[in-house]
Amino acid sequence: EQGEQGERGLEGADGEPGVPGTSSGGGWSMQIFAAREGERLGSSVPNLASLQFVGSAIVRFVDMSDVSKFRKFVEDTPSSDFVYRFSGHVKVEQAGKYTFCSTSDLLSRVFVDFELLVENKQADEKSCGDVELEQGLHAVMVDGVHGDGEGGVVLTYRGRDTDYEEESVRSVDSRGPPPPPHSRFLLRVFASNKDLDKFPDLRDVSLLGHSIVPSLSFDEEANSMAQFIPDPPTRNVAWQAFGRFSIYKSGQYKFCSLSSDGSLLYIDSELLIHDDRVQSPTKTCRSLTLARGLHDVHVDGFKHEGEPIFRLSYEGPDTGGLPADLNSVAPRAPQLPRPSQWLIRAYRSSQLLQVPSSTAGLELVGEAVVHSIDFKGTQGLVEDLPALPQSEFVLEAFGRMEVGRPGAYSLCLTSKDGSVMELDGRSFIHNDGRHAAKRVCNEAVLRSGTHLVKIVSFLSGGTFQLLATYKGPDTEDEEEVIDSDEAMAF
Image (cartoon, rainbow, N blue to C red; front, top):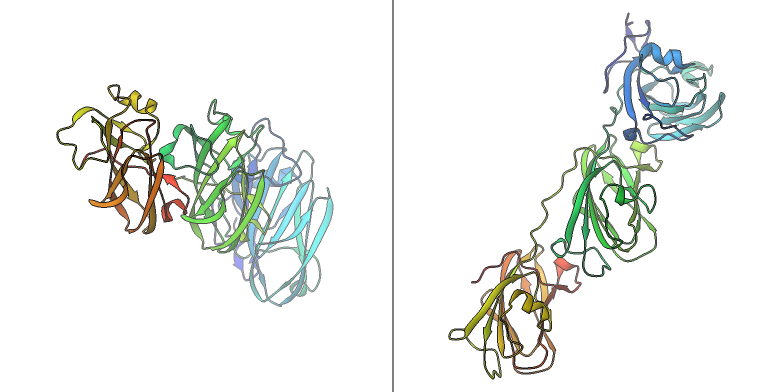
């Protein structure tokens, strides 16, 4: 039966098997994880979220000399290829140097106060580490891999509290991290009909598909995105991933991304790593302080040619300062933006020298909804406006430009022949008259929200050209085609 809890831990017989999660009682919280069917574990501790949780129990000591000892507490412990994790808190009465030792059949690690102290890769050999401990409680965790041998794992220590005699380690508080759920990220993959040299505006690409993936680790071989999204193109692919991860111990964490081509990493909606360019596989790391609890992670990436390559890892108190794959629970993703929509109207005209002050009285030859104001010649226009003449016409465009971040923006019109732009009902760009392709820009300080954009241009003869672009805080000061949230005249 359960013994009484003394100041130095449990003094009675071993207790009954516990339940998954944590416990504030004395002893050690033991958790067992099994490899998936057909898989073999190597000589390193894998990501626990990739394993099958078998069971847990509260045990008196980390003293599992063989598999039968594990099965005494967790009956379904496999005979081979499983991972164990023990969590507890050691109470130090007398400050000083303490030596912790582990003996195991394949691999075991000892963490003290969330720092790696011992990594024992010697089968059936004892490995030790020294640490200076102050008076009080100290978190201790032991994990490791059991292969197919007969041995298990044993933890001992010595120091002032033990009169320097080696003893089994007592834990007075078995609280520790619960078993992680299976990791789940939401992956979205997009195709672009333009050459990509950075992550695109999502209104300019087409969604190929989405999938739940266990980790953010993609390469050109076994872990390619193609296993989650069938038949992706081999050029100009963009992708997004969303997840939520749990931090058990508050503190400083370092995140590292390895990507080709570009990627952007956001933690709790704040940009942490900016690697948005065409590049060979490049590793970039940044650190930040995280509080205990759930945090959002979001990655944008693209690949100009070939399979996307990306891997995300982190390290900090929860990982014992060692790099580890990030796990995710209950991924949340925003809705995809609606495609850009401009309303255009074409009118027949005659011998114009400039943009007419009004289209009243002109013959309407058609209207359509287009993705952007980016025309070189009339071929693309004729697909939407079959009755459009080859010359002598007026084109009118209506759009609603959404500004997310307020600030100074530059808007530009490139046209042949003339063109004008109204912004929120006021004349803004004057690029009028008959001329070869010419670019005219103007600047304005814009608030967050919707801004009405109206463009009128004409062609008297020659090759038609019209392009509307902008740059500012929303585009990271990179020039982009102006998108419109709604195709409606005003």
